Image (spheres, one colour):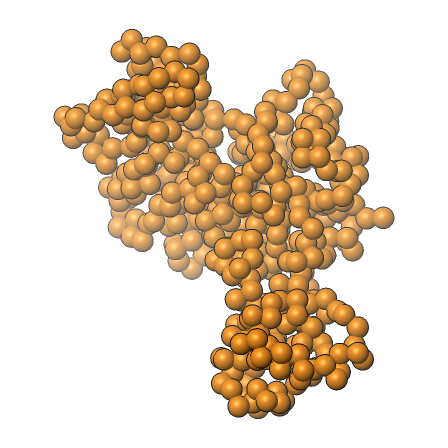
Length: 475
């Protein structure tokens, strides 16, 4: 094998001195190799698949050099199969890379920037992704904020949300500047050195003039605060859309169990369909955790903080497929909370999650989750936005509480019982693909897309009014 690799370089060594080093992105060549391509010298005797295997061992940087210094190697080295292999060994999984580069680069929020692409070259995509220096990712959250690098697998830190950060009596601009300055300080980076992707918490749900003005006011405050800190580019997208992207979808219904409320958000091609209607139920993660606390207190289970209750919810609680049948089962289980010892729960384990479907058991007067989703789906069906109903039959769960085992299966079962077959056929409920970090991962996908960095420096301030905004500071 070493001899084969040596021959690769010998076949181009007599031409190498006449070419300077070039980046991968400088090569714009056909995406596949055919038998009619130029001669490869001694390698003509080998099957093309074998030659591709050899070039894989050379690595992406040297493979790109091969295509530059020797025309006869260029068609083969440009083969999409080779660069798909290299991308599969990149930071993100191949599935997410393929989704982002085939769906998001020509849609929200990148579509305003991109020139039409007639041919998808994964060699070019690889080169552009390598050049992306990384973006700061901030998930505003509704309970707490998560932040980190787009090149990292998960968030590196947490803080209070920007809506709750600092003195709440201070102007929003002042609080936002303090919030983002704190994030950049904790990450030890200069604000002017990297673009930022911010997830916006779901708020002001209606499609009224007042709600639109409130959303615009928040976005403008984020623009101003970050640009006054000399951030080169800002991409702000609502959490529901990002959670959908994390599930590798651009259309569907996102059920976001937030801190205070649960939102049921219809999204078509990345845009929130506010004209269809965003359903909101008055039960969120705080109420679910609070209900478990009440049950523990009634059973004389002592604990030191709400964090203990939260830990038990995350590790012991689940959603029953059949609530009434579960009442007659032995469901006792124990968990050790570090620093506080062992706790044993029984019926509290499934009663806690049941509050999402029967809010009345926690003393809350609100529709159940299944009813809110069914109502949203009915509105989507009636709106007739597309030729078929497939776009809203994928339901993606989002938020930490939506990670409760059994929740997706129970919701799917309830929807089949509530909706007529014409609407319910084909429904699929997807658990949070990345747990509580789904919105952050969706923002990370945007921050790593090949066209994210390569276009923003050459464009003036842009804005997509409905779901996404992407703004750039130009010199």
